[in-house]
Length: 237
Image (tube, rainbow, N blue to C red; front, side, top):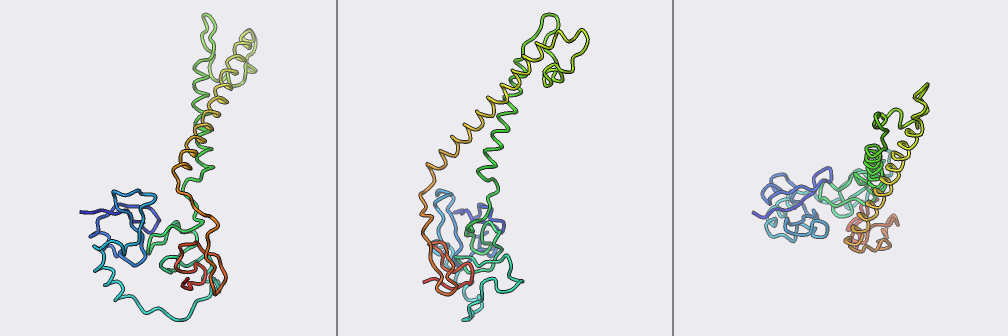
């Protein structure tokens, strides 16, 4: 049985067979599917290109209500606040949706679960934590005493009193090991993030960000591959 990647209502790609897609009622005109053996990033195609869905699409078209000739206004009322129309199937959806629940098209401007800045910050923090732990474990030791505990190291020996003051130089050196590990780990995390994003950019297909289609009714700019205006639902020729 051939399986396809299809986006659910939350925009998450799930792997389903053709029978399951039809049973869920997801076989609708304009919906994007990606065969399981194709590239998950570039292999998405309209459902109409797959012959196993021909009968289901005809059935869905027969049950669909006739389209109204009246063009609705874009966000004309308070009830429509935060809503747009899907550029592929024309369905009214939230402008914060990651993908259209009707056809699965990713929505322009939807915030990803992990932003590039969030990933970089996470890698830097992870690097700082690992580097600090390594620096702390490698801190110097004194004869008969060994390594100082974390409380003395992190303060640089300021909390040492009485006869223990003679250990302050050791605490200061230990603090330098800890701080150096944090700095080195943070730099390593930043370099790792830079390397990861550089590889992703090399693999990413080139996209013309200036390619847009102007709606003849409301003059809003839409993606170059849009079939409907995402503001007023006017069909783009």
